[in-house]
Image (cartoon, rainbow, N blue to C red; front, side, top):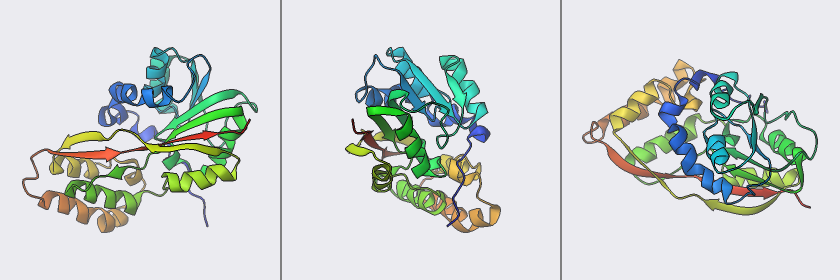
Length: 252
């Protein structure tokens, strides 16, 4: 089976924060990481992106260093948190063995080409007893008709599934022990079907960037039409999505 490549988010650097919630989103998610880690110890942001979570943790007193595959995303991160970031892949971390006592990845593991290799690299750079907090990128949807259409699009076009039932066996295979598998508080969204349809046409979702036109026409375009065929497609609808959270530990 051919291994997929990790997704480089450079094409999204200029619109990522605007379309994903920016610093406010980072501040909403950071407490989930903070409550599972220790403030006084250096923490690795394994997939820093534009640095919104690192900024929020830094504001809480965490010393953070990070890596990301995208130079363009890291430029944004450095502007937020300073020169504490390196351009690198999760699959090849530029740190010696047992450097960190804690690490986290937020909305990252779904875009790592060889996820087992990425997990083994985090395992390598953690000290015995070290903790790795993971918030997967794959979304858990509610039963709203709009959400069900979005779930179908995700399942048809996202190459990697990083939900717990996939990550945990991979993590255990490299030596980790899963000490928590749970869910974060649901997030509430209010967008019209037309707004979502327009965003899909603009390829705002990462897993649509590399989809060629024929695949898009076959797998996505019919669902865009379904969104626009819903009653009153210009009216905002309220729906919820959920994210899982995992805590992996390297045995002491």
